[in-house]
Image 1 (cartoon, rainbow, N blue to C red):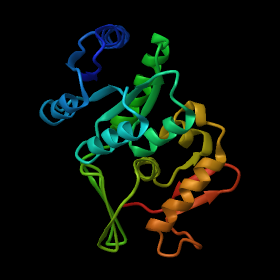
Image 2 (tube, helix red, strand yellow; image 1 turned 120 degrees about the vertical axis):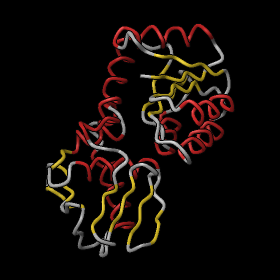
Image 3 (cartoon, helix red, strand yellow; image 1 turned 90 degrees about the vertical axis):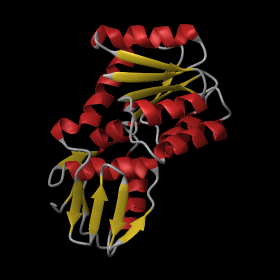
Length: 231
């Protein structure tokens, strides 16, 4: 596995590297000291995972995440400080970050979150480069993160895309609220059923022919959601 760490403080980069090498001894690490250099390395070196220590103002950090998501589906872990608010973390996840970890951090927590993220990225054998299609009704290109409904490209937020990806790759299975919240957001959100209901509502408005009578994303009352159609 190849990891890129975007951080100007050598001590923090060493801590992250140490954490990861406990589980991945053959880890290849690349370093960048600023976001511009980090974006260039994502483009040229294609890492599997990126740790981005964002010391910028929240709006600028959100913009950097969005810039990365314009061209890359790389696993993206944001390192935040204790001054970062819950609202700012939610904005980073919405923009496309996969995880937010607060520094100083517990090495075992970092390793646990990275292991979970790597499993999500690998998708249990699910090929990210494949195209999922239900005729022209819904087409998802997992390599480019493009989604088409009735032949027209639609724009999803980073969180909406991750939620749709998780539902589709488990098509036919009922996914409990807690599982979806943990995989799409993080374990801290596992009990926030209202959050996932809001995003399911938004997703249905974008992909369902009739959002009020959904045929693709079905509710299993009191349990979770199921994507009802196979490719």
